Amino acid sequence: APDPDSLGPALRPLLRLIFALVKGPLLASGTPLCPPQLACTADERAALHALYAVLPPRALETAICPHLLAYTPDGMRCEQLDVRLSARALAKAPGGLFLLDTYDTLVVYRRPGEAGGGG
Image 1 (tube, one colour):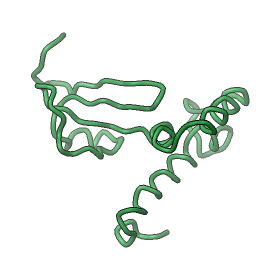
Image 2 (cartoon, rainbow, N blue to C red):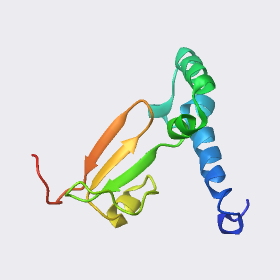
Image 3 (cartoon, helix red, strand yellow):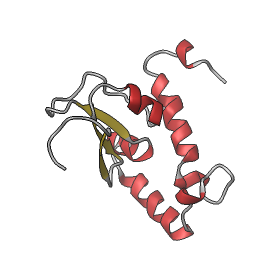
Image 4 (cartoon, helix red, strand yellow):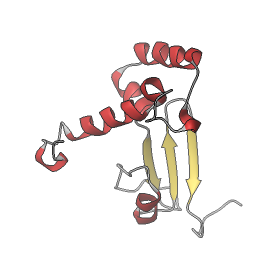
C-alpha cells in the first residue's frame, strides 16, 4: 500500500475516498467488509446507485465520505476542517460542537462537559 505521506496533497484525499467507497453500503453490503448496521437490501443499493449517478462531484464526495466540522461553543467555525471520524479525533479536535454532513443527513454532536447553551 502506498504511504499517504509520499503522495502529493491532491492525491491524499483519494485514498480516503476509495476506502470509504469500498467500506460503504453501495459496494460492501452483503460482504464481510460491511458491518451489519450498514448492510442494505438490493433495493437500497439500487437507490444509492441511482443517487450517486446524478450527484455533482462535491456532493458525491460528501455522500461517500462524510465531512465532520468542528465549532467552538460560541458558534465560530474552528480552523481545523478535516476532523477524522473517530472518537480519538473528536477528543483531540478544537471546539466542542461538531456537525457531521452525510449529504442526506446532518448530525449535530456536542462533546460532553462542554460549556454552551441549550439543554
